[in-house]
Length: 166
Image (spheres, rainbow, N blue to C red):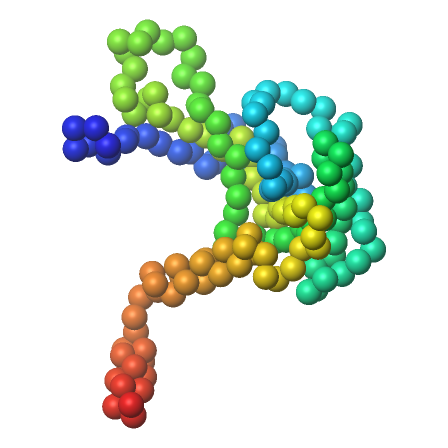
């Protein structure tokens, strides 16, 4: 934050043409790789990265295998928790406008390009398991939900009874 002000912007999660059938669904095509790729541009990924079932199940996860730059990867496709969705965002095209006509809010405008409800995460040399840091991070969704859930009168009575017993 500069000068005590926060960033002003907008994210539009609805399709720009309003047709929900035209929504791009990337489920099964989103991958979390255990590396950094220093390239941002088009690439024929499916020509080179070809995951296949490994025929193994670990901790209830169906293991897949693939190779990336000669390294063997083991991964698992997992759904996002109920009530959550993943989005691919891109800067909104504002057309040809003069810089003087653009506000700070306009320059920080984003729109949904695609959506997903499951993703595949990958490990180097080890099978995926319930103990992986990536999978364990999903427990924070339940913690956040519990923290932001409104407290009911029954919750207060139950907590009071529990405290009196101790």
